[in-house]
Image (cartoon, rainbow, N blue to C red; front, side, top):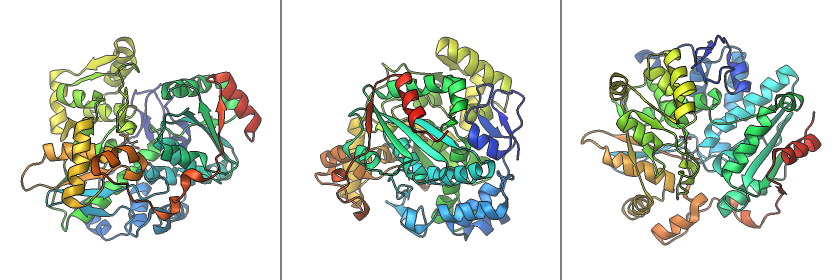
Length: 470
Ligand SMILES: *Cc1c(COP(=O)(O)O)cnc(C)c1O
């Protein structure tokens, strides 16, 4: 499989290059040159496979520069019941006859990002070994991404993680989860400032190409194709668990931020998975709901971006969105470059033509929005009616899924985190604490390893230079 850029630059990459690279040189995102399709017979064969074997079948369609035996071994060590808490890896739980939850949050950090990041850690380690190279991962986090990256990379050979987080802005549980890691290769840098401050520092350091090259700086952000690819697998698994026969169709509802998770659903459908609708849920930060209703994509300023009770969806722009637009516009890279490189960067927004907007419905996407009040009500109802506790992001999904529900159809809502990560709203909605797995008993009391650092790129670069392997 070859990979191309959404902006049409003449690149021709294979998987392992795309894995390590991030953005394409022309500023676009990497996408496979085509989507391999699976027929009914293949679906039938895959239906009975354990998760790791299903993952291997799907990944092997997109990865042809890692020896198959090695890929199979990487996948088998990644998706184990020990790491993900059950033999199904992503068990499906029915709430009622119309809605089921796909449990994606039983990995080490209790958010769905573990599903991709655990694989990424193992793919990185193997590729670095092949190249005899080192990698220093620099990232900024407001919670889930940073911890998922750290738990995926801890103790890995030739990899160090430098993770910036805003002082005092993450939930107490999220802070404890990251700062209690004692591994030598994990560095928590706490910045006096907001998440945007952290992200600006990462951008400034990455823009210093000499520094970047000298210190082998890389990232693990959500535009990485390997992360998206890993997420395609659980759409297949969810579908197989929800149906008996490939003639059945189901919808998926996805709590969305950077459009990574739902984009994986789009890829699964392109491959031939019988998905009825992809339902996109946003919180008060409704950039994407606006787009799917009007065809207008208007990026928000950081001042316009609200701090909400489903914080992992508090986005001002959706960094994976360009992949979807590329497909929506019939893979017209000229038009994509025009929209993202010219219109968006000059005017902060773009509008699709009427004809282009009409394609959205043909693609089977619908959207909706959920607010703090909706979230509280949905968590409370789900607890009272089904004795199931859901986290605020999943609640946004359940709320929007119910709005779009049609009689006689079924919707799988992707559960994106466990409630224990967001204790305040859970207590407010249900009057009780979320259950806590024994692995994290007393987490807040454990010794912490983190360093407060001045909010400047220079300070961060000096820290990296002192601590990295290069
Ligand atoms: C990251 C995250 C999301 C958003 O996922 P995207 O892939 O960015 O759309 C939603 N919920 C939780 C809990 C998350 O951590």
